[in-house]
Image 1 (tube, rainbow, N blue to C red):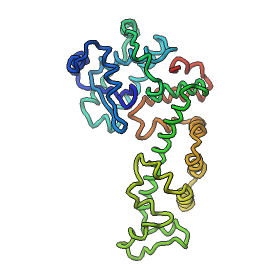
Image 2: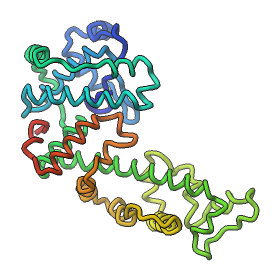
Image 3: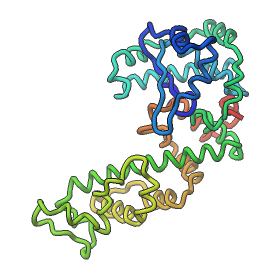
Image 4: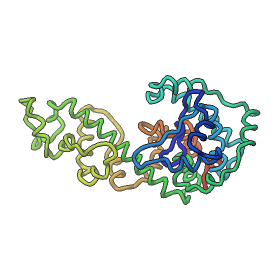
Length: 324
Protein backbone atom coordinates (compact mmCIF):
# COMPACT_ATOMS: atom_id res chain seq x y z
CA UNK A 1 0.00 0.00 0.00
CA UNK A 2 1.00 3.61 -0.55
CA UNK A 3 0.10 6.03 2.25
CA UNK A 4 -1.30 9.38 1.19
CA UNK A 5 -2.64 11.16 4.26
CA UNK A 6 -4.71 10.51 7.38
CA UNK A 7 -5.60 6.80 7.18
CA UNK A 8 -5.97 6.76 3.39
CA UNK A 9 -3.93 4.41 1.20
CA UNK A 10 -3.62 3.48 -2.45
CA UNK A 11 -3.32 -0.17 -3.38
CA UNK A 12 -2.82 -2.18 -6.56
CA UNK A 13 -5.66 -4.17 -8.03
CA UNK A 14 -6.22 -5.92 -11.32
CA UNK A 15 -5.42 -4.23 -14.65
CA UNK A 16 -9.09 -3.44 -15.29
CA UNK A 17 -9.47 -1.29 -12.17
CA UNK A 18 -9.03 2.03 -13.95
CA UNK A 19 -8.94 5.35 -12.15
CA UNK A 20 -11.05 6.92 -14.89
CA UNK A 21 -13.88 4.48 -14.21
CA UNK A 22 -13.59 5.00 -10.47
CA UNK A 23 -13.84 8.78 -10.88
CA UNK A 24 -16.99 8.40 -12.98
CA UNK A 25 -18.55 5.97 -10.51
CA UNK A 26 -17.97 8.46 -7.71
CA UNK A 27 -19.67 11.23 -9.67
CA UNK A 28 -16.55 13.38 -9.78
CA UNK A 29 -16.20 15.81 -12.68
CA UNK A 30 -12.40 15.98 -12.83
CA UNK A 31 -9.57 13.58 -12.00
CA UNK A 32 -8.09 16.08 -9.55
CA UNK A 33 -11.33 15.99 -7.56
CA UNK A 34 -10.17 12.58 -6.36
CA UNK A 35 -7.81 14.22 -3.85
CA UNK A 36 -10.36 16.07 -1.68
CA UNK A 37 -12.64 13.04 -1.96
CA UNK A 38 -9.94 10.71 -0.64
CA UNK A 39 -9.00 13.17 2.10
CA UNK A 40 -12.44 12.84 3.65
CA UNK A 41 -12.50 9.02 3.49
CA UNK A 42 -10.98 8.05 6.79
CA UNK A 43 -11.82 7.09 10.33
CA UNK A 44 -9.86 7.33 13.55
CA UNK A 45 -9.55 3.56 13.95
CA UNK A 46 -9.80 2.24 10.40
CA UNK A 47 -8.05 2.79 7.11
CA UNK A 48 -9.54 3.57 3.72
CA UNK A 49 -7.92 1.79 0.78
CA UNK A 50 -8.49 2.97 -2.78
CA UNK A 51 -7.59 0.27 -5.30
CA UNK A 52 -6.57 0.84 -8.91
CA UNK A 53 -4.30 -0.59 -11.57
CA UNK A 54 -0.57 -0.11 -11.18
CA UNK A 55 -0.09 2.47 -13.95
CA UNK A 56 -2.78 4.77 -12.57
CA UNK A 57 -1.33 4.44 -9.08
CA UNK A 58 2.18 5.29 -10.27
CA UNK A 59 0.89 8.36 -12.10
CA UNK A 60 -1.05 9.50 -9.03
CA UNK A 61 2.13 9.21 -6.99
CA UNK A 62 3.95 11.58 -9.32
CA UNK A 63 1.22 14.19 -8.93
CA UNK A 64 1.18 13.66 -5.19
CA UNK A 65 4.95 14.04 -4.69
CA UNK A 66 5.22 16.96 -7.10
CA UNK A 67 2.64 18.91 -5.12
CA UNK A 68 3.44 18.09 -1.49
CA UNK A 69 7.24 18.48 -1.63
CA UNK A 70 8.08 22.17 -2.14
CA UNK A 71 11.84 21.60 -2.55
CA UNK A 72 11.60 18.64 -4.90
CA UNK A 73 12.70 18.47 -8.51
CA UNK A 74 12.06 15.99 -11.27
CA UNK A 75 15.15 14.12 -10.04
CA UNK A 76 13.67 13.91 -6.53
CA UNK A 77 10.35 12.55 -7.72
CA UNK A 78 12.04 10.04 -10.01
CA UNK A 79 14.14 8.80 -7.10
CA UNK A 80 10.99 8.41 -5.00
CA UNK A 81 9.48 6.47 -7.90
CA UNK A 82 12.48 4.11 -7.98
CA UNK A 83 12.48 3.72 -4.19
CA UNK A 84 8.80 2.81 -4.27
CA UNK A 85 9.37 0.14 -6.94
CA UNK A 86 12.27 -1.24 -4.88
CA UNK A 87 10.13 -1.35 -1.75
CA UNK A 88 7.37 -3.17 -3.65
CA UNK A 89 9.79 -5.93 -4.64
CA UNK A 90 10.37 -6.67 -0.96
CA UNK A 91 6.77 -6.00 0.04
CA UNK A 92 5.53 -8.68 -2.40
CA UNK A 93 6.85 -11.31 -0.01
CA UNK A 94 5.09 -9.98 3.09
CA UNK A 95 2.12 -12.04 4.31
CA UNK A 96 -0.29 -9.08 3.98
CA UNK A 97 0.52 -8.85 0.27
CA UNK A 98 1.32 -12.47 -0.57
CA UNK A 99 -2.07 -13.76 0.60
CA UNK A 100 -3.72 -11.95 -2.33
CA UNK A 101 -2.54 -13.45 -5.61
CA UNK A 102 -3.74 -10.40 -7.58
CA UNK A 103 -1.96 -7.89 -5.37
CA UNK A 104 1.22 -9.98 -5.22
CA UNK A 105 1.26 -10.36 -9.00
CA UNK A 106 0.87 -6.58 -9.37
CA UNK A 107 3.81 -5.98 -7.05
CA UNK A 108 6.01 -8.56 -8.77
CA UNK A 109 5.26 -7.24 -12.26
CA UNK A 110 6.09 -3.62 -11.46
CA UNK A 111 8.82 -2.07 -13.55
CA UNK A 112 10.14 1.47 -13.21
CA UNK A 113 9.54 3.99 -15.93
CA UNK A 114 12.47 4.86 -18.13
CA UNK A 115 13.71 8.38 -17.57
CA UNK A 116 12.18 9.44 -20.88
CA UNK A 117 8.76 7.98 -19.98
CA UNK A 118 8.95 9.52 -16.55
CA UNK A 119 9.82 12.94 -17.93
CA UNK A 120 6.64 12.92 -20.01
CA UNK A 121 4.52 11.92 -17.00
CA UNK A 122 6.17 14.50 -14.77
CA UNK A 123 5.71 17.30 -17.29
CA UNK A 124 2.05 16.42 -17.83
CA UNK A 125 1.38 16.24 -14.10
CA UNK A 126 -0.60 19.30 -13.09
CA UNK A 127 -0.49 21.56 -10.05
CA UNK A 128 -3.17 20.61 -7.53
CA UNK A 129 -4.01 23.45 -5.17
CA UNK A 130 -5.71 21.11 -2.71
CA UNK A 131 -2.51 19.08 -2.23
CA UNK A 132 -0.43 22.22 -1.81
CA UNK A 133 -2.74 23.50 0.92
CA UNK A 134 -3.11 20.24 2.78
CA UNK A 135 -1.94 20.12 6.39
CA UNK A 136 1.58 18.69 6.49
CA UNK A 137 0.76 17.01 9.79
CA UNK A 138 -1.68 14.71 7.96
CA UNK A 139 0.91 13.35 5.52
CA UNK A 140 2.93 10.18 5.78
CA UNK A 141 5.61 9.81 8.45
CA UNK A 142 8.49 9.39 5.99
CA UNK A 143 8.34 12.99 4.75
CA UNK A 144 7.73 14.42 8.22
CA UNK A 145 10.75 12.49 9.46
CA UNK A 146 12.93 13.86 6.67
CA UNK A 147 11.73 17.36 7.57
CA UNK A 148 12.64 16.89 11.24
CA UNK A 149 16.02 15.27 10.54
CA UNK A 150 16.86 18.13 8.18
CA UNK A 151 15.85 20.76 10.74
CA UNK A 152 15.20 19.66 14.33
CA UNK A 153 13.38 22.95 14.93
CA UNK A 154 10.97 22.09 12.14
CA UNK A 155 7.39 23.22 12.55
CA UNK A 156 6.53 19.52 12.18
CA UNK A 157 8.54 18.52 15.26
CA UNK A 158 5.45 18.05 17.44
CA UNK A 159 3.76 15.95 14.74
CA UNK A 160 6.85 13.75 14.40
CA UNK A 161 7.17 13.21 18.15
CA UNK A 162 3.45 12.47 18.41
CA UNK A 163 3.89 9.67 15.87
CA UNK A 164 7.06 8.50 17.61
CA UNK A 165 5.04 8.30 20.83
CA UNK A 166 2.36 6.18 19.18
CA UNK A 167 4.85 3.89 17.43
CA UNK A 168 6.94 3.55 20.60
CA UNK A 169 4.01 2.43 22.71
CA UNK A 170 2.59 0.11 20.04
CA UNK A 171 6.03 -1.51 19.69
CA UNK A 172 6.35 -1.69 23.47
CA UNK A 173 2.97 -3.41 23.76
CA UNK A 174 4.12 -5.91 21.13
CA UNK A 175 7.23 -6.61 23.21
CA UNK A 176 5.07 -7.18 26.28
CA UNK A 177 2.93 -9.64 24.32
CA UNK A 178 6.11 -11.61 23.63
CA UNK A 179 7.00 -11.41 27.32
CA UNK A 180 3.50 -12.64 28.18
CA UNK A 181 3.94 -15.60 25.80
CA UNK A 182 7.28 -16.47 27.41
CA UNK A 183 5.70 -16.38 30.86
CA UNK A 184 2.75 -18.57 29.84
CA UNK A 185 5.08 -20.93 28.02
CA UNK A 186 6.82 -21.66 31.30
CA UNK A 187 3.99 -21.03 33.74
CA UNK A 188 4.78 -24.08 35.89
CA UNK A 189 8.40 -22.87 36.12
CA UNK A 190 7.38 -19.31 36.98
CA UNK A 191 8.85 -19.38 40.49
CA UNK A 192 12.31 -19.42 38.92
CA UNK A 193 11.62 -15.80 37.96
CA UNK A 194 9.86 -14.57 41.07
CA UNK A 195 11.18 -13.53 44.48
CA UNK A 196 10.38 -16.19 47.07
CA UNK A 197 7.76 -14.08 48.81
CA UNK A 198 5.82 -13.93 45.51
CA UNK A 199 5.92 -17.60 44.58
CA UNK A 200 2.72 -19.33 43.54
CA UNK A 201 1.74 -22.94 44.20
CA UNK A 202 2.54 -24.87 41.03
CA UNK A 203 1.90 -28.32 42.47
CA UNK A 204 -1.55 -28.40 40.84
CA UNK A 205 -1.47 -27.11 37.24
CA UNK A 206 -5.24 -26.73 37.22
CA UNK A 207 -5.12 -24.01 39.90
CA UNK A 208 -2.68 -21.50 38.38
CA UNK A 209 -4.95 -18.91 36.78
CA UNK A 210 -6.67 -17.78 39.99
CA UNK A 211 -3.29 -17.27 41.67
CA UNK A 212 -2.14 -14.94 38.92
CA UNK A 213 -5.15 -12.62 39.27
CA UNK A 214 -3.98 -9.83 41.54
CA UNK A 215 -0.38 -11.11 41.63
CA UNK A 216 2.12 -8.22 42.01
CA UNK A 217 4.23 -9.31 39.01
CA UNK A 218 1.84 -11.38 36.90
CA UNK A 219 -1.64 -9.84 37.17
CA UNK A 220 -1.25 -8.01 33.83
CA UNK A 221 -1.07 -11.38 32.04
CA UNK A 222 -4.76 -12.02 32.79
CA UNK A 223 -5.98 -8.43 32.29
CA UNK A 224 -8.39 -8.32 29.33
CA UNK A 225 -7.75 -4.59 28.89
CA UNK A 226 -4.02 -5.14 28.52
CA UNK A 227 -3.80 -5.27 24.73
CA UNK A 228 -3.11 -3.58 21.41
CA UNK A 229 -3.39 0.20 21.31
CA UNK A 230 -4.68 0.46 24.87
CA UNK A 231 -1.32 1.73 26.06
CA UNK A 232 -2.64 4.69 28.03
CA UNK A 233 -4.47 2.20 30.26
CA UNK A 234 -1.29 0.17 30.67
CA UNK A 235 0.81 3.19 31.56
CA UNK A 236 -1.78 4.33 34.11
CA UNK A 237 -2.36 0.96 35.78
CA UNK A 238 0.99 -0.84 35.72
CA UNK A 239 4.21 0.35 37.27
CA UNK A 240 7.19 0.16 34.93
CA UNK A 241 9.22 -1.61 37.63
CA UNK A 242 7.13 -4.76 37.10
CA UNK A 243 8.47 -5.11 33.57
CA UNK A 244 12.00 -4.01 34.41
CA UNK A 245 12.11 -6.74 37.06
CA UNK A 246 10.75 -9.46 34.77
CA UNK A 247 13.14 -8.64 31.91
CA UNK A 248 16.06 -8.61 34.31
CA UNK A 249 15.04 -12.02 35.67
CA UNK A 250 14.72 -13.52 32.19
CA UNK A 251 18.11 -12.19 31.11
CA UNK A 252 19.76 -13.51 34.25
CA UNK A 253 18.07 -16.91 33.96
CA UNK A 254 18.99 -17.34 30.30
CA UNK A 255 22.41 -15.70 30.80
CA UNK A 256 22.04 -13.47 27.78
CA UNK A 257 23.16 -9.90 27.19
CA UNK A 258 20.16 -8.30 25.59
CA UNK A 259 19.20 -4.69 25.01
CA UNK A 260 19.23 -2.57 28.16
CA UNK A 261 15.50 -2.82 28.72
CA UNK A 262 15.72 -0.91 31.98
CA UNK A 263 16.99 2.20 30.20
CA UNK A 264 14.47 1.78 27.39
CA UNK A 265 11.55 1.36 29.79
CA UNK A 266 12.61 4.45 31.76
CA UNK A 267 12.69 6.51 28.55
CA UNK A 268 9.27 5.27 27.45
CA UNK A 269 7.59 5.92 30.78
CA UNK A 270 9.20 9.35 31.14
CA UNK A 271 7.94 10.32 27.66
CA UNK A 272 11.37 11.14 26.28
CA UNK A 273 10.35 10.54 22.70
CA UNK A 274 12.91 12.81 21.11
CA UNK A 275 15.65 10.95 23.00
CA UNK A 276 14.16 7.65 21.87
CA UNK A 277 14.18 8.79 18.24
CA UNK A 278 17.84 9.82 18.43
CA UNK A 279 18.60 6.58 20.26
CA UNK A 280 17.08 4.75 17.31
CA UNK A 281 19.36 6.66 14.93
CA UNK A 282 22.41 5.76 17.06
CA UNK A 283 21.51 2.07 16.88
CA UNK A 284 23.00 2.26 13.37
CA UNK A 285 20.67 -0.31 11.86
CA UNK A 286 17.26 0.32 10.43
CA UNK A 287 14.38 2.01 12.23
CA UNK A 288 12.01 0.58 14.83
CA UNK A 289 9.39 3.04 13.58
CA UNK A 290 9.03 1.39 10.16
CA UNK A 291 9.27 -2.20 11.39
CA UNK A 292 6.77 -4.72 12.68
CA UNK A 293 3.14 -3.75 12.22
CA UNK A 294 4.18 -0.46 10.58
CA UNK A 295 5.97 -2.22 7.72
CA UNK A 296 2.98 -2.11 5.40
CA UNK A 297 2.13 1.52 6.19
CA UNK A 298 5.19 3.24 4.78
CA UNK A 299 8.04 2.82 2.34
CA UNK A 300 10.67 0.98 4.38
CA UNK A 301 13.37 1.53 1.76
CA UNK A 302 12.69 5.28 1.81
CA UNK A 303 12.82 5.38 5.62
CA UNK A 304 16.09 3.45 5.54
CA UNK A 305 17.47 5.96 3.02
CA UNK A 306 16.40 8.91 5.20
CA UNK A 307 18.03 7.32 8.25
CA UNK A 308 21.24 6.71 6.29
CA UNK A 309 21.47 10.37 5.28
CA UNK A 310 20.93 11.35 8.93
CA UNK A 311 23.53 8.91 10.21
CA UNK A 312 26.02 10.04 7.59
CA UNK A 313 25.42 13.70 8.47
CA UNK A 314 24.35 14.31 4.87
CA UNK A 315 21.50 16.66 5.77
CA UNK A 316 21.53 18.45 2.43
CA UNK A 317 20.39 15.20 0.79
CA UNK A 318 17.24 15.33 2.93
CA UNK A 319 16.06 18.76 1.84
CA UNK A 320 14.31 17.63 -1.33
CA UNK A 321 12.19 15.19 0.75
CA UNK A 322 11.06 17.84 3.25
CA UNK A 323 7.58 19.29 3.54
CA UNK A 324 8.26 22.80 4.83
